[in-house]
Structures are given as C-alpha cells and as structure tokens.
View 1 (cartoon, one colour):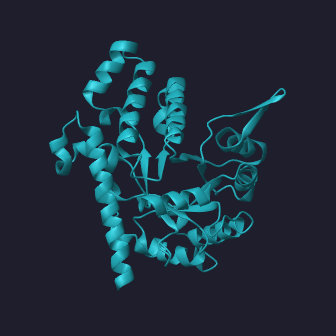
View 2 (tube, one colour):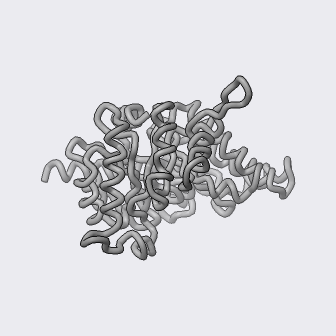
View 3 (cartoon, helix red, strand yellow):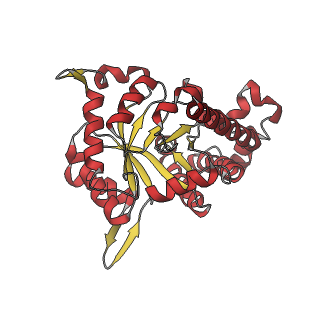
Length: 311
C-alpha cells in the first residue's frame, strides 16, 4: 500500500491528505436540515449529515488528492450511527481509489492490540469465513506501550500489505511534556523515531517502509532531525494550516527525491468556506471552497519544494 500511496502522490503531484474530521458546526445548515427532516434530531440524523457532508467534499476533491484521513473520534461521538458513517465514508473513499488513513491512534498490548489491528487493517475469522471490519489502508498507532503495542499491527500489515503511521512527535502544544523529555542525553521522540526506523526495516515497500511516522508541522526543526534518523520512513505531517504550519516550514520533512512526506489539513479544507479567503463560496458552496483550498495547499507546498531544489 505504501507503493500505491507514493504512486498516487506522484500522479497527482499533491503530497497532501485531506482530514475528514467532521464537527456539526462545520456542516452547512442545508445538509443538517435535510438529514434531520429524514431522521429527526437524533444520532442517526447527525450521522446522515456527516455522511452527506463528507460525500460532498470527497466528490469535489478526489481527482486532486491521493489520500484522505478520517479521524474516528469525530464519528464515535455519535455512537453506533457515527461509526456506520465512518465505515460508509471509508468505503466510499476507496471506491474513488483514494488511499484511506484511519486516524484511530490505537495502542494497547498483546491480544488487544492484535484485535485492533485485525478490526481496522486485517480480516476477522467468523466460523469458516473471514471479513474485513473497517478495512482502512493505513492506521495511526500510539507507541508509548512499547513494541507489544506496535508489533501486532506490523504482523497484520505484512499479511495485508497495508501500513501504519506511528506517533513520534505530535503537533499539539503540550506534546513536549513527555515527548521532549531528555533520556540518556536525547529527547524521547528521537528514541521513538529510531525504533520506527528499526521496525520498518522488516516491512519495506520498493523505496519506503510500510511503517511510517507522525511528526507535526508545528515543529519543523525537529522534523529536520527526524527526517535524517528515518530516511526510509514516510512521514505523515499534521498541523498544516489551521494549526499554523505553512509550506515553507515543511520542506525538511521531505527527502531530496521530493517524496517521504504527506501533509494533512483537516478543517482548513473541509471548513474552508468559513474562512474569509473563501467566503465567496458561501455555505451552499462548501465543497467548491474545499476544492479551492486543496488547490491552494498543493500550490503552497509544491512551490516551497521547488524553491528548496533551486536553492
């Protein structure tokens, strides 16, 4: 799957992923009203609004982008109907040939971690049959329980030729409370980065590992260090746009081949119509606003990478 992701990035010339992280206050009133008219102001109604909202964004952007990243918490808040909307979104994105990164941030031990891995990336045995549960292409994994929590995912990835992105240095302001702690003279995130590179050696694609890393756009200098520690690791970069990251901050996350990273933007794209820059699209044109925001993001990152190469 890492080979497919790279192929789609090269085809679209867009090393970006759209985060499908729906909140009710992002969803235009006409979508909410239509969903509530059919299902009432219920969890089912909210889930229907989420699904219709996602579908509009995917339809408007799928020809421009290689991948999407639905954040499962935004669906879980609506209970079982929300999870059904999550699964519907995953399946629809795959029908559009988009790579799906399930942002699930799972991390447990032993059989529990294996069950998470099977549920999201593998196949579960039911009598004489097997079924894929959520069936994403990649999943995000929290490594802070150690190898016990990560290796079950890697085993499933080997069977299914799928991948993971391991949290190394996250984009949130308080990440340094633990991740920046100095352990034997080096910050903890560097130790984690080295482990990610080591885990990835056993599960390689053509040029990059199926075991990727999450490194926030809000810490470009740390990204530069981690890029050198993990040369064969694909980096998922959250924190672009709404959290402050810009194209020029991101060039060090990429290798000299122009690959090695994929940059996420969530509300900066899916709620673009709320920004003054895209206000002319209005609520009804929320999907068109998202499409324009994708184009602008591609131009920003591509321009920054070109400038680096010229320099």
